[in-house]
Image (cartoon, rainbow, N blue to C red; front, side):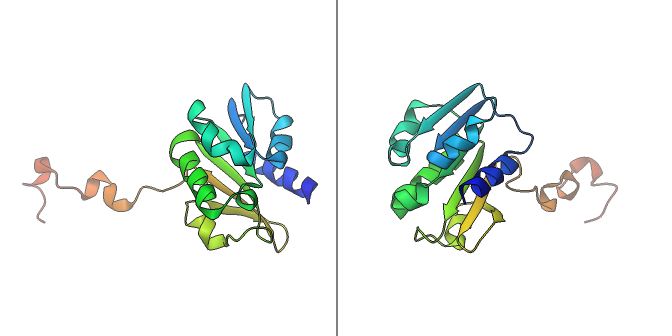
Length: 154
């Protein structure tokens, strides 16, 4: 499983070469070791929530063993803080057999399932740039435009 997880994380990173990265967990640390990074901070899962306040915003945060090692409340708090404040992109490796989280619990936090390679192991991701598409109603063509009031009838 370890080699499959490393390959899946490398594939999720794709062509992006992050300048700053956060690794939480052993598999995450191994996956980021091969990349050429400007700065890579490695934190143990139990210390991650407290240590985030000492760091700024990371280009990518790779997490492994977080949901399995922390309680659901602490883990959801960590994921929410990373998503909202500390990381532009999140890659999360989950062993559903070892934690009490369902796939719905993880997607409820805004993460997308990227890959499954057996019945229990999955890879999830979050990217702020592709998180939400702009809806059609936000298009300025649908807004009231005073310059067009004489030309069009609503």
